Every structure is written in structure tokens, then in C-alpha cells.
Image (cartoon, rainbow over all chains, first blue to last red; front, side, top):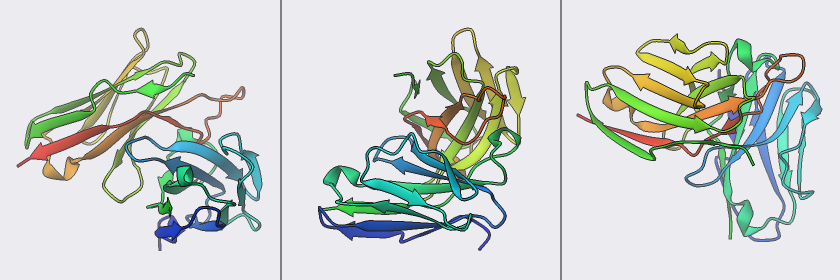
Amino acid sequence: GAGVSQTPSNKVTEKGKYVELRCDPISGHTALYWYRQSLGQGPEFLIYFQGTGAADDSGLPNDRFFAVRPEGSVSTLKIQRTERGDSAVYLCASSLLGRVGTGELFFGEGSRLTVL
Amino acid sequence: GESVGLHLPTLSVQEGDNSIINCAYSNSASDYFIWYKQESGKGPQFIIDIRSNMDKRQGQRVTVLLNKTVKHLSLQIAATQPGDSAVYFCAEILSNAGGTSYGKLTFGQGTILTVHP
């Protein structure tokens, strides 16, 4: 498709399990971002990739969270030993270049994670 | 820490009226602001943006006003339609030393706009 694609759209898991969330950005977009959105809140920045490298991972809450983008396109957000507080919608966004000021971020529809 | 916040969590208007959604920001160094619309079950959708060296910018049916003196941002929607019903977020970016703004946005909590036919 033409937009940012995220899978799964919904994921229910048990506390302590490992989870992977996938993001397929718009073709040709070099910049990719992960955000987390809790109910009733605005999205919170997690990590930013420029190409294959994480240019800014300052938003990752702790070392249970990790993200990769090995070929500079698809990215996977990995959460180890999930906790109930990890329940949220995880949003992925991409932009043509890193410079948001010349355009905008395109967001996917998100992956809703529920940790029981 | 510094954050972006909204004055009104909900706004109800009649179809055809003009809507004004407000946002207060606290980081005076932020130099780029964006308004997003988010419908239920979807990701945020870009509406309009403005740089800190401007005080007004117009798009199609939307206008963003920036008042740096009081650190206030507003989104005006003309002739509001039922399809405008959504949550609206303002977001800010602080450019790096080179003047480039990348997508590390700080979002506010959101305003729910409901448009009645």
C-alpha cells in the first residue's frame, strides 16, 4: 500500500512474554520513528532511525525495549518481559528525509498492545 | 519537564460553525509546531504546521496562529463539518543546532472535537 503499514494491528499477551511489532514505512522514506500512545494521551517519542541506524533512542523507557531496522526499510520494535504498563498503541511514522520542517510525518494506524 | 498542553479537553460545535482549538506550550525554545488530527483507531494525520518565525499560516479551511509572547498556539477550522470530528493534537519540535527539525515531536494531551449535524 501507499501508507505506513503496521502489524499486528492488535496483540494481546501475558505479562512476562516477548513481543515484536513490525513497521513497513512508505517506500523511499529514509527516516522512521516509533511512538507510544497511552489511552487519552498524545503520542510519546521512543526512537528515530535515519537509514539503518538509530539516530535518537532517548525515548525508549528502559532496556526491555529495543528496535532494529537492519536494511533501512522495515523496522521491528521488540519488547522483552512485557509488563501491564506496556499496554498502549505503538505508532510508527516515516518521513522522506529527516527534515520534518520541509514536509510531515506519515503515521501508521498503530499496533495496539494489551498485556494481561 | 517542559511539555505542550491544551486548554480545553472537549469542544462541541454545530455543523457550519467555526471551531477554535487552543494549545499552550512551555518550551520557549521550540521553533516548529504542528497540528494533527486523529480519528478513532487511526494514526495522527498532519493538518498544518508553522515555524516560530511566523505568526499565522493558512491552509484549506484551517488557520494556525502562533503567539510567542504568551506561548500559545491555536487551530481555527472554518465551516466545521461532521468529518472534522476527531481528537486534535498540537505538537512541538526543537530544532537541532544546525536548524534541522527531525521528527522528535512533543505532543499535547489532545482536544476532542465533536461536530453535530
